[in-house]
Image (cartoon, rainbow, N blue to C red; front, side, top):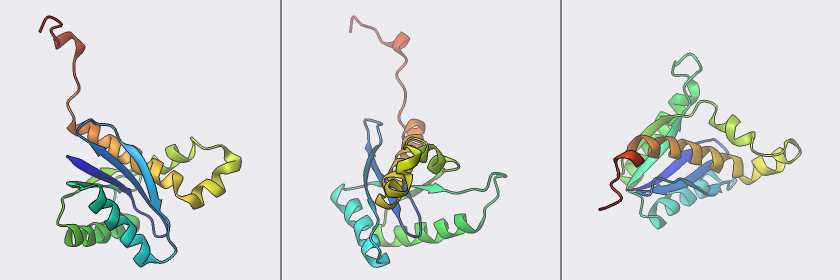
Length: 147
């Protein structure tokens, strides 16, 4: 399993990578001003990392309802499925951008946001949530040290 985590935005697309080791790591975000170049950046990342699965943050409203942004993500995910023929998994992304942004000093947030770093950190949180659900945890009490 080789996964690309995606934090979709109209101007920036945060990206992350994770595999069977179960650890998500941030990748350079797609921040190109031209939407076609952003799309090419994303597809290039999927190709270069030989992704088997795509994991996209799903922006549910705080009351669990599906709003305008979630419908945008649905359309984006459908476009991804057609372009890549890969499965697209949704992960609830509520508060991931807030969590990612809180890890950056307040004075640096504007510059860091434009770089896409916060978006890729959010994608990393989204992907890590997915990997944590998929990769079984090892119970240290169940391991026999004599084997």
